[in-house]
Length: 286
Image (cartoon, rainbow, N blue to C red; front, side, top):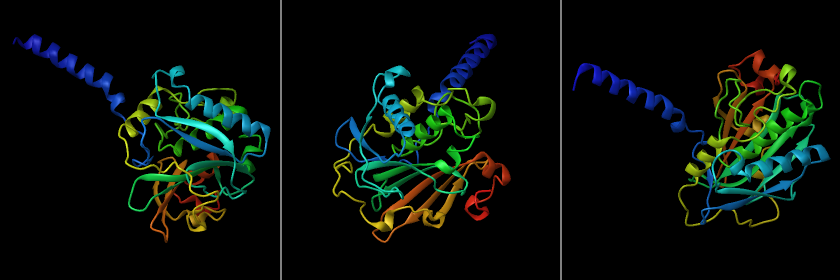
């Protein structure tokens, strides 16, 4: 083969790799997933929301995650159904469901909190919760429909087993990035919905079937107060990871029943700017 042809072939191979590389990216959250015996399943979202505004954002979130055709792929393994909430202000976990809540949780530095519980020794999600902190969403900085939708869409999707596509603040036009719909961007609808790669990742996460399911609700209440996350941030357990800009942190706690509770925290801009490398629980979120 002539040298010129070799160079052309090498350029073509490199170009193909550059084009294909983003498709190889993954944003599974630790491999966590609901155990299920069918290719497609429905996750119940318990509506414990206190205002019509938040209820409309949950409805939009459910619709968007149920409509992959809008964003590219033709199918999704995860469907959602909004049902009556079975939780309380603390947003206690309920087996087989994700409970969704909003309250004034305090000036603690977090906008959104997603918690999942994993069956002992497995990556199987048994229950989840998604919390929105009105202490901040009632302020001028965060009180706009685009920021509310961004956070609602993201926190609910964490309980599917999805992580972020990006945490650097840029917009990939998915709610699974950390673009902030505040300030000059308050009127922007960027990053308020899933994108096609989110559905690609869900199909990857749920490409296999399990022999059992964790979606069959076994009780009408949480499976034990031991697994619940309370308003006390020390209940989150040990800090195991944090984004470089300090906007997100992940915590893990092992419970007496052998299960593991994992919590993803989405911090405010102010908390992150104060000390990106700090565990914001220790600075009061300021």
